[in-house]
Image (cartoon, protein in one colour):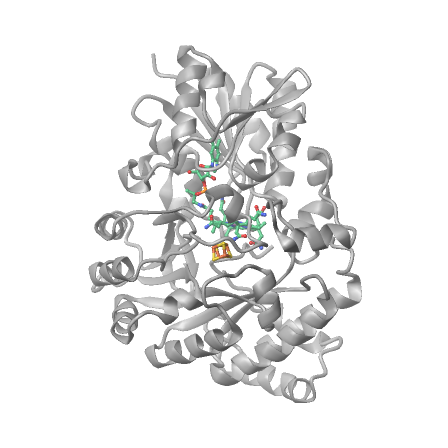
Length: 493
Ligand code: B12
Ligand code: SF4
């Protein structure tokens, strides 16, 4: 008998910006041959709890598998799972993904979630469902957390599985056309994850405890085959590679680019500054020819001291950041730099130093896109940054309800992280600076920003930028509100 598994992707963005739920597709890939699936997406339905309950009753499903990131996704997951559990106490609820991987104890201590899978999901999930549906001891399921009486049990982590050996995402299990988006990349944009993990261990990064410095990549041949498939089947003209670190291996990047050349797909991916600095000029030329339009890099800080504290590793430094954006300029690839501001031990000085550095960045390459976050602690053993944050008074919530509160959902968006030092005036200074610099240097992702509006914004922002006077730029905010756009790395709430 084939059992049905319900998969639920809680809301993760605003309407029209929904991405393929790759986390759930990845785990269903190893189940699809033997189990049926129903996908419920909080981005596509107004009442996910009612849908889950209706599907569970219709299919007699016994298991609900949920993928959860911190933030608004967590908030909806808690609310919906609560309602589902109340209506159907017999339906087992399993969570996986970033939030349960980093906060498993809080999750399984709640009265809502029965099990959590920690870290890479495929092997553990397959073992879990076979045990759950066909019998055996859950003690033998790796990477599993659950409550036994008052004790949280955590089984040993499953060995990492090379993703190249895993089946492709089972695209037919859901309606892919509902995830085709429109952005500066194209009118038919989809996303893919061509590798999982990252070999580095930056002390602010949620990926480190999840992937434990592993980088598991699909081969270039497989990625190219998938791109051909998506082109033929869905006529895509844009691709967001959401890999944590797409560009780790130059040979692979080059081979993917060669295979994508001529497919007419404009694409975006994430990489590290120091890795990319080792790339040959001819590789950049090949990448540009293949359609690479924008390259996201974590510049993180305008201070070399802070970069050391962040354990950024490798040869990362502010000089390298300026050098890479200069190189990309010659290939017509737009750099997109993210910064984490307000880092301990001296968050205020850190912010000012990074603002000064960002002005330099724009001088070197005005096309550079900026993504500004506030430092938000993640649980990571031995993280100097977390230790400092705790010393300054930071603490994580102790219950799932507290995590799901408006206050903490907001913190996860890294706009107001709730660290003791990120008071209103500091956050305001960063947002005002962002408003002024974005108006002064409008960039390519502003697809709705046409000639006259660009000029108007630039002119209005000019005096502020020159005098470094960023306070209360209400006139600019008003104009910018008219030009919302879809960026690959944020969800645009
Ligand atoms: C795509 C993406 C999104 C999409 C939404 C995706 C969706 N589900 O609808 C968008 C762009 C909208 C988005 C938004 C946000 N995101 Co996001 N997002 C990602 C991204 C780039 C890829 C996730 C992905 O699909 N991976 C591919 C799959 C295959 O890998 P995976 O998720 O790790 O899944 C594996 C395991 O985790 C596990 N697993 C996952 N789910 C489940 C479920 C079950 C049941 C099981 C058994 C296993 C399991 O098995 C999978 C296979 O091994 C990650 C970074 C990254 N590269 O991972 C960030 C990331 C998860 N996002 C993050 C954040 C913070 C956000 C935001 C909250 C904030 C922001 N400003 O970006 C917003 C808001 C979301 C919200 N409203 O709550 C952080 C989480 C940080 C943390 N502390 O945990 C990450 C890690 C980015 C980062 N570098 O910091 N995001
Ligand atoms: S290089 Fe990027 S993905 Fe890797 S640990 Fe550092 S911040 Fe995280």
